[in-house]
Length: 320
Image (cartoon, rainbow, N blue to C red; front, side, top):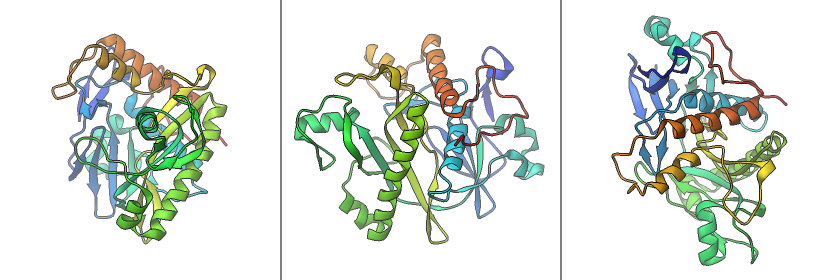
């Protein structure tokens, strides 16, 4: 476990985990370990990537926020779709192997059932932003979905649209249409994940808006376990979604954001070429980004991470 200390023990950051378990994969944010043949340990680090490059600075509390927000949504959506969560507390992991790491893993890890991930990311867009806005300006469509003329940047779409994408191991994911999803996964599964993605987005957006957050777009990931489609990975987090403050929303321009857009905006001002190695972020940008993640956590769950999670603090459950 590589732990980077900041101002105090409570605000320590975890940049990388090294455990006495088989490493299945190390992504831009998560480290995934095998626990037997049927389960995985997913550890959410404090790493942050921008423009598909992992930055040298970890962001305090980011791993806690992503993990706990996902647990919150898994609970909130459990009546709509089963998920991969087995147990969400480190006390259920092999004590003889992981006891010495429990304090670092607490609140940032998930013990999950091992499913077969689908080959597509299920993107849902509710507002006209990002690459969708560029697509609309060029074609009047977003990923093949024809939209009304005269829409504004960041304007709300008439209804949410499903715009799947490939999962690329490097570089940007590639947008695909629904028929390509059918070719990859079969019509029954493609229709299932399309419909589930829209339902999850609508239910999550309605809840988040009551908490002062607009979910402009997001991506869901699904897997197959025992022949059934289940929800996996992360759900409606600041990393997988575009979150805007509802009280300052104004279409026709870019919106302030609760996610890593703070970092992206800074990197654009210094004219970095968006290739490794990434520049070190100023402390001010790190702290602003950390505050934005914690703000999302507090708004959605009603809990506060400003003082740091204690060693016995429980996980979040959905507030219906």
